[in-house]
Image 1: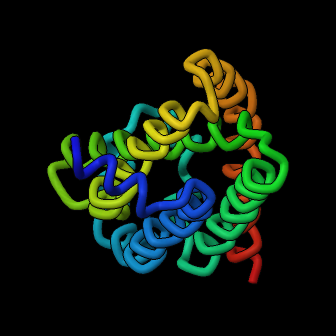
Image 2: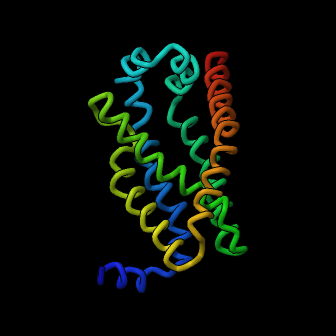
Length: 185
């Protein structure tokens, strides 16, 4: 545990908070770079393995190009910078915790997809190598530095459960718009 104490001394807490959008972008660079080619190669197979409701729900996601995916990433990045600003400048951590929960859980989405489809899926490498260690360490620091209490983790989860469904629907609706615009051109 000496290495952990030493790490705590090396990483200022505010730097740890600002690492969130940076780690997010490093992770999403992997997805942005690989997604279009991966969809062309594997999209049909992956889509056919989905249940009918999911196939319909995510259909537009399998028709996106790199530019449109990058636009989605930009929207999420703006949200992450906003929740980080709230945490850094106003000590308002609840939205940050909710976003951190999603980031952490997202690791398991990538891992599950790779195991389920028995292949590389965009984002799996950086989710395991960067997102997982960052998330665990961020939780550790938030709790051990007494920035938050364990109950705040539950409040963050509640906020995530409330905010995620409409955010996901907006994202999917935007993807359908991208695809419809492309087919009209």
